Length: 332
Image (tube, rainbow, N blue to C red; front, side, top):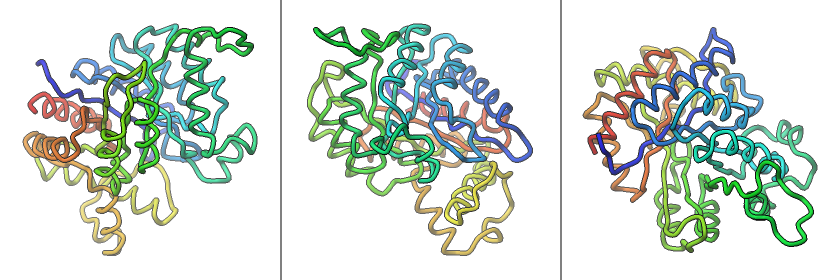
């Protein structure tokens, strides 16, 4: 069905309890292959490090794996955490991917480390690799992806002249301002940090300056989607994500837990309230419930695209959730 609202997927390759990273990576490819059939526009993977519940640390490698196992869906990063890397290395990696899968590769960039400070220090090439250099690093990447300049001594090969599309990702007003200033598309991480979603979207659209990549503003937001054949089943599946958020607050992260019957037996009221606050940009339920939720957040944000993410313990239930989400998006 033709659809005016693009809908996409953000994946962190969750590792369910009792399974391995290899299982999670194979599951990600399976989701991507189904997503392609269900009309999703893009499939992004997110960079995380030192997290026992996520298998998406080697982002460029995983992008290549997903792109190689699909045919036409756009594949990219949501995102590469640029302070962890030298821009030239990222230009070469994504230039290689674009050379192998032309017209299908995207590079979403974030300025957070995607991990704890000790791991961030282990990742960074030197002490200069900080979020303070993020704007300069974005410009450096654009330089490497562009045409050869007179006197240019350092070149990304592959990378030069590939013009890999760059997105700015964020969970605060900073990313919105930078994306607007650079004239780049913008995606907000409202699935875990929703507080400044509406203000960031407003700032981005008001301050946007056209660029060679983007003539007018283009925005997306990430929402948690847990869909099932009934509202009751979806709410049960959603307890997996709720547990994860509570455990993150407790600093007791682990592999993705199975759903439970009663969240109130798992956590204290104040922990539940904190998790509910973090997960407010979520739609949980059957087809009609999900469709209403998507419509509400689209109207509220004024965004051009929905990016769905869903941490669900059972792989088949996760597939079904994304299938229902696609049906809901097609009906908007």
